Image (cartoon, rainbow, N blue to C red; front, side, top):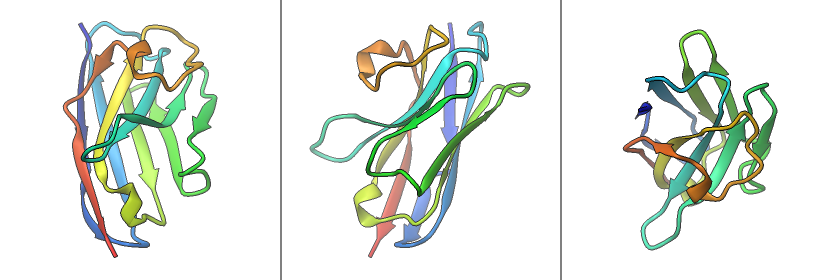
Length: 124
């Protein structure tokens, strides 16, 4: 059973930065695909960024050039560096793990383990 714990959310003004962390503990190897998703009030959960077991990254068009996903394989911590934040980035952010090395998708049901989320609020 994999357990994920996000941290690093908060309130910032537009243009600001935040770094989210997701500590993974359990039996899932660090080589698995991991991703960040977000969900704003009244909207569905959308993929933001994902990283394969070998380090290949994919980003949603809305965050390309502003967000960076990376992980510490030794500590099994996933990060999301968010720069140039916009009010539209306001959402609950979740990390997730897929039991496969390749990601291939931002479809939430493809990811087995989820954290509880951390809130990001960006004011204009």
